[in-house]
Amino acid sequence: MGVMEVRVDELYLMNPWWRSLDEISGDQHIRYFESSNFKYHPERLFKEISSAKPGIYTIRGPRQIGKTTFLKLYIKNLLESGTRPTDIFFFTCDGISDRFDLIETIKTYFQIFERRSNEIRYIFIDEITSIEEWQKSVKYLVDIGLLENSLVILTGSSSYDLKRSSERLPGRKASGKDLVYVPITFREFLRSFDVDIEGRSMEEILSLSEDELKILSAKNAFLKEYFLKYLNTGGFPSVINDFLRESRISELTRNVYKDFILGDAEKYLKVRTNFIEIFKKLPDIIGQRFSWNSLLDIFTGSVKSVDTIQKYFEYLGYSFILMNVFFVDVSKKSVRMKKQKKVYPSDKIVAEVISDISGKAVKTSQIIEMLTLRHILKDSDMLYSGMNLYNGPFFWYSDRGNEIDFVCNCDGKLVPVEVKYQSRINRSDYLGMKRVFEKGILITRDIIFKDDRVVGVPAWLFFAIFENE
Image (cartoon, rainbow, N blue to C red; front, side, top):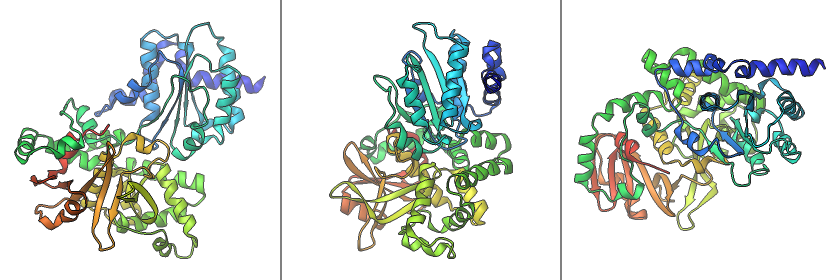
């Protein structure tokens, strides 16, 4: 009985609203959110997960992005709309040892509060990917009928784990979905300041005239000030909040992110020192083409195989820390894994951690390329491989040395996007794009131009108007 009593005590601690409805307001995540200078409300996730429909949902994204805060805000909404407090169960997997423990914990909840017919139960399980083979436990609970008429939301920081498991998740039927929560775009950043700019598709941007682009730029020139902030913060809400409060990213925040990146590497791959070696080298290779073979010389004999290096980079992609970009075969519109690759940090705070570890700054031009990739990325590109971008966006190069930074698939058509974040643009800067694709977007610092189907547009304007999904 002792174990059960301890567990019940813990469950009451994690679900204080069972004792008193007001307790949700005292939750540390809710308090932090309410006191933030930057309150990001992930509208898309709220829309995707209807509280009226039972089903099993997974949300994956990097650590510290705000997944737990989202769960707590969802719980607060449920309580405020009259859901019975004991119909809501929140649990974090940090404190349990294995998947059997997970089963027992959920069974315990259902034993404490017996189900009333026709009532939906709301089950929130945070960081489920820290439990090996968790999907077997969820399948078992579905098979014995315990999760019937329940809305289940599972979160995880590793897409690798969810990739192997959510595909085999039962109980999906009509409702339930795999979702991602990744660093926010400039449009989402603006929306949080109540600035709503009309969005345009890639095709619409390509068809704008030079005059229309100039009018758009003049009308939205006030956005440049916001863009400078976004360029300094990136897309993690807690980092943005920190910057707005302190006018910089504080030492404390940088260390929090550094600890989770290195801590996770140690936990999953037992190789903290090798990751430090990778991070020391990254400023030299961000945005540059490389092969796995060419990276072998980074490691002073500590890693001898190409497979191991590939595994490390894949892990960093699955954990939403690095974006791994692959070569596209233009004629077949498909990825060629054997060709060279490129890599970018997933966000500005990751670039800061890279700088801290390596002692080398990540250049502004590299950050603009990183943000361009982030903005042409669709959620669906990240569902099963995290930021290993096997489904695009891609990049392209020719044997002659022509290279295009990114190639994205827009409604079945390949569209090239080249970054030239500089004050002067020559025709040679986009000639390859024009010759091979006959169209494209050139991301500039402040220059606007149109040359047939090639459009030059400033980074701040492109990020503000381009609507991806």
